[in-house]
Length: 168
Image 1 (cartoon, rainbow, N blue to C red):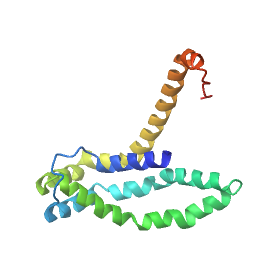
Image 2 (cartoon, helix red, strand yellow):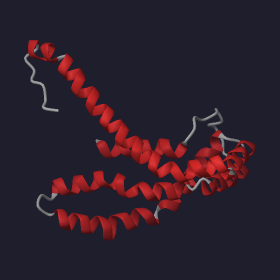
Image 3 (cartoon, helix red, strand yellow):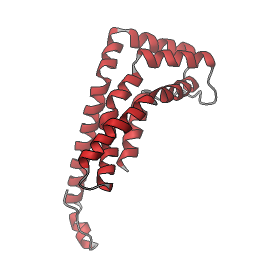
Image 4 (cartoon, rainbow, N blue to C red):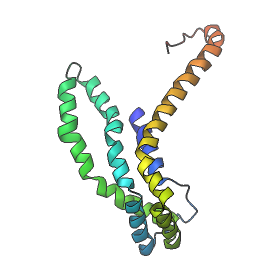
């Protein structure tokens, strides 16, 4: 389902880096540093900013379940669904801090905090929502192109097997 894929991409975006192997524990000092790092990197604000495009998948599911009621679905999304998700962002912040603290020491998190406070770190922070949106579009366009080219290349084999190629 596309919604799960988008949520996975968001999770990967928010995690930002590969873990370094400390998956068995989370030190309270590291949790505190992780919360500071998440704040200085504005990751929850980034997530908040990309909730609307991500929620479009949910909106599409609701529209398909309620044909002809697109206006009602849109109103529901804006008035109820998105505010509920926005309200619950602190939950994911706490979970993310615990996660980061399992993989990074307090000292390593201090280094990340220094990076995010630097000029280049702030540039990364300011561009995160745009990079995510552009990356999603890039991935979608690439995936559609590769799928179309692969099916075209393999059309003789599809016909040989009695299969029809989809119109993409």
